[in-house]
Image (cartoon, rainbow, N blue to C red; front, side, top):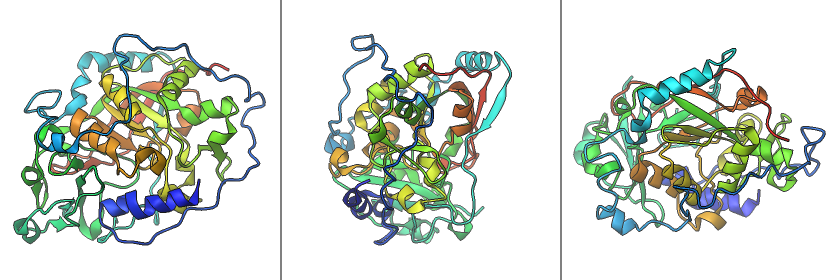
Length: 408
């Protein structure tokens, strides 16, 4: 990781700025050791590159061109892809038939349930806030003025200026002692992040904000999720290919993608080819495995300073497939390298949540499943049934019937 990139993130594009937390925090840790031990004896053989899918139906061309903020605010993304009254987004793609198919595939052999949630502990690294991120629930609003009645009713007004040229606004819930679901393992709801006053399906900040929670797009719209989950072992693929510039070894000996590594569309497709995984489709849940979770305990400053992940082109590629949600084992999904983002703050969150209705899963821990070569199975997520909450933090479960070793 380059220190100046980490500092740029901390000063300009971190969630601390998004929530107006103020200056100061942990600086990036030292760069990883140059002496990287390969995980397997023959790991340097081949790239496992799959045949090109270019030109296949629905493949499209996907780029990083920023959306037109003014056009979005004027209504360009309204109505949403599932109609004017929709609040569920691509969860609509999880049909009973698709759940049944995922269950049949998961039950094809000996079934193991894998805990995908982070183990919580005192001092778990989370971006500091004022009030801090630590059942009286109040809504925390940032990037716009929610008004005097909002504050008088107990609502928490953060800074009123949106973040960055892409005008990031948003909400979080706060409980007694300032606890929030927005920490560690979570599924962001559609009311979490917006563009200026605009949120999913044309809901405006004024319509959504009440002192005790969101009036729409809250956890009550999610319900239990049971569908096909597909782990994309990006760091494992890099280790197998001997791509030592793309990963480092954490203090606990596990490989981790480098701090500002951008996961590409080729990475996604090559990982699936290597894993012998069926293509992603509507209602599925891709889960990126980057290894970033291995910094949580041993290097929390580095964990919070940056993260590897996809960007806009990859988000659009997955949105084109109408996946139900997109998850990762890092704290915020998208790559934060200023050379990629050009100063924009969390635009993947904006586009996935507010345009496509695709929720975002964060801190999904996938190591145990990967150790058993279980790359797909029945993913079960049961967000807390708290009306008006901005995300659910109950730990998801992956049911996998039978693992299969990846291609060399």
